[in-house]
Image (cartoon, rainbow, N blue to C red; front, side, top):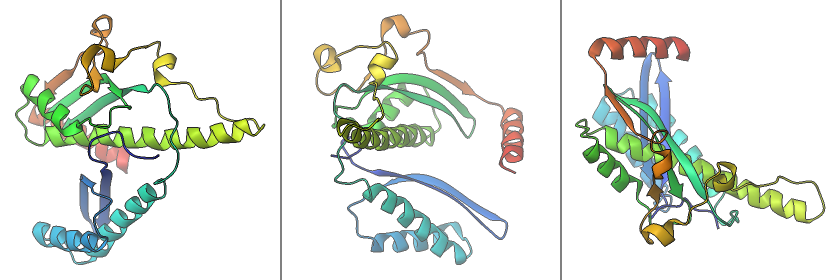
Length: 227
């Protein structure tokens, strides 16, 4: 059945709200089993802490509730079963830290912990900014969520195909990418991430610290793209 393949089945929530020239952007995870009343409490507290106009309360609450409703619409549905080792890619800037990386993730390990992976990554790469780790964990969770939704769609299309209608042919990511690997066999049940030796050149993490001028230039370009 549908769930995100991590120890905590959390929903990645992304907010980008602009009212009267003021913009609020944020990304965090939410426990879908929490009562809906917590959404409004969170929205009010956020507006108070950030000193935003009161109109943001309704917009924040509605955006969170809408994303939770999307997540819950998949609950109870069948997911495509089988070998699922997929590539996860990171390409992000957090403040002055630029991170690019890719690695393989085992979707059959429901004890995986993106936050622990992100903490280890930041420690290994000597990343000092405390905001980078949570951003990496969120990016992983967001991609795993998209993959889980895709697997629900694949299972649905597979059932249609079996009924004699032309359906979607699912190709496991490991076969599509020429990768065949049993993580449990080589690394045990707790492992979800692996970098194969022959792929180290392509799968090597890159971390750059940008200057203030470079950050300003990037933000200017991003602003033009947004407009």
